[in-house]
Length: 359
Image 1 (cartoon, helix red, strand yellow):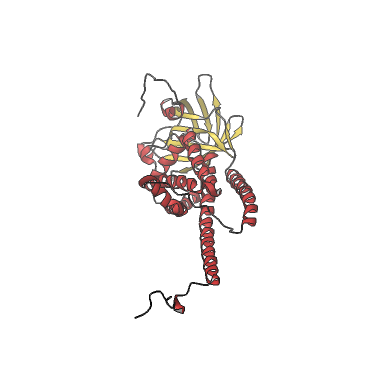
Image 2 (tube, rainbow, N blue to C red):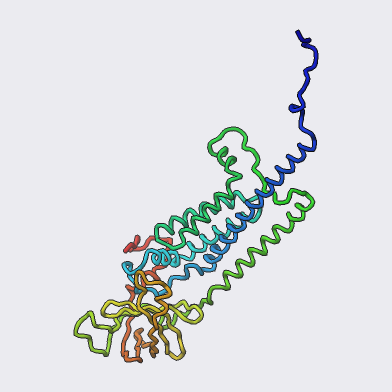
C-alpha cells in the first residue's frame, strides 16, 4: 500500500505549459483579434462612405431633386411606383434633408471608434426604412439597400451581447469592446490623433464630390413658369379626338438645372409630352420634348428618341394670360389655379376653412 503522504509523479504530458507556449498562444490570439478588427474596420469604412454619399445627396437636394410645376401634368395613373416615391420625397425638402442627416450622422458615428455601436444602430434603422421603401415602391436598388443593412448588422455584432444584456438581461452591463486596429500602444496614440483628422478629410471629400456632381440649380418664377390651360387656339380641331394633337394644357417649371427647367404638354388626344425648356431672352423659349417614357422601355431607349425642338414666343398680357406663337402655334394660355394647388398649398400651423385638405 502506497504512502498517501508521498508526492505523486506527474507525467511529462501533464506538465504545465512553458512560458514560450503561453506567449505564442497570446500572440496568436492577439493577431486573430487584430485581423478581426481590421476586417470589421473595412466593412465599417465602406458602410460609412456609402452612407455619406447617400446622406449628402439628400442634404443638397440632389438625389430626389425639388418638386416643380414643370411636372404638374402627369397623372397618378401615369406614374410608376418609383416615380410616385421620388415626387413625394422631392415635395418636402425637410423630409429629404432629415433623411440625409440621419444617414450622414450614422456615417460620422461609424468613423469614430467610441461611437461605432451608435452609428451601426442608426445605420441599421436607416437602411431598414430604405429597404422597405425600395421594396414597396419597386426601386431598382433593393440589393444595395439590403447589402448596406447586412453590413450595419455585421458592424454591430461585437456589441450585440451587451445590447441583449441591456434589453433582456439582469445585473451589471459589462463595458463594450473598443475597436483596436493597432495593439502597440505608442503607435495607437498617434493614430488616435490622425484617425479623426482622416475621418474629417474623408467627410469633406465625399461632401464636396457629391455636391459637385449635381448641376447648378436656379429659380425663376417669372412667366411662363406655372401651370396653364389653353383658353384659345387658332388651329382647327381634328375630326376625331384620338387624332387631335392640339395642346390643351402646359406646365413650365421654375427650377432650372444648368439653365433648363422641366416642361410638360398635354395634348387634346391625351398624350403627354415631357422635356426641358430654356429661356432664350425677350420672351423666347426653346422646348425639347419627348413622349412620356413607356412601361418596359429602358432609359437608354427613351433618351435615344430624337426630341422635338420647338421655339416659342411668349408674351405676358395685362390680364395675366400668355399669348404664345411660333412653330404653327397661336395660343392664349390662362393660369390653371386648380392644377397648381400641389405647389401653392404651402404649410400652416393654424386650422384653415378647408382643413384637412385631402383630394
